[in-house]
Amino acid sequence: MKAEEGAIVSLAEISEIVELADVAEMATLTTALPEADRPSGRRHPLPRRQEPDRERAVAAVAELLHALGRDTTDVNLRETPRRVADAFIEMLTPREFAMTTFPNDEGYDELVVVRDIPFHSLCEHHLLPFQGVAHVGYLPGERILGLSKLARTVEHFARNLQVQERLTRQTADWLQTQLAPRGVGVVIEAEHLCMSLRGAKSSGSRTRTMTLLGAVKEDRRTREEFFTLCGLPA
Ligand code: ZN
Image (cartoon, rainbow, N blue to C red; front, side, top):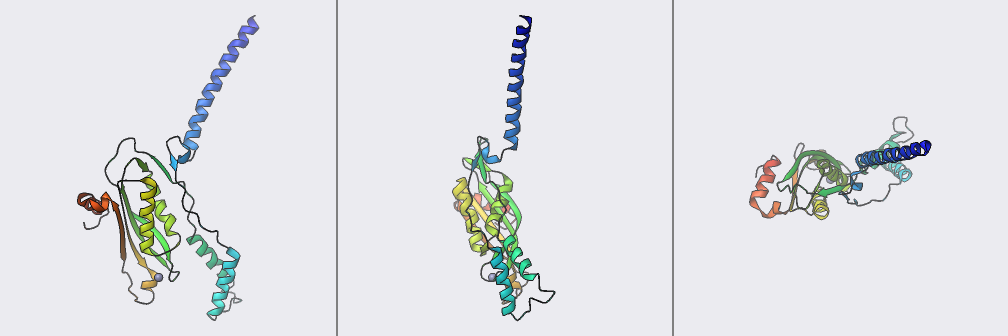
């Protein structure tokens, strides 16, 4: 009898320990899980791109050097095709990230703006870099997203063959589609090496593009506030 009672107590204790362990494990899991797998998080898939063919890119860079009258057997140029191919692949490959939105439980209804997000991209006309800063803001509706995700969204679209106008538009449109906010504003200021090194040779000049949607476009007070928060003249 005593042993049985002992056994019952032990079982109860065990089940209690198991329950506690379950709770602890769940807590750890909730923190460790990617944001999108948390109950309230919603993951938004980013557009996919074709994988680069590295060997082909290396051969193509070697061919370009030959066409430019350079000798790729030269000790100084031997590794250049590989290095150039890898550099381009890196510049054109966005880092993976989970784009996750959450319910706007606190009902936050003022602008959220992240300014001076540094980025670099490649001009699709000359394959030369353009780089600068992006200011991204939105007026939340039903859902919000982590602040760092605004920067990652810019980076995702920047690591591609681009023109600045499209980069601005794609960033704004994607946030509008995925987040359904009441307004979106994206301003990009960049210097283009294809302008400063060749052609017009306008070194130091910056191009500014912007896309304003919803209340950031339509409502004068919101628009002015957005520009002020971006550090731009309203
Ligand atoms: Zn260009």
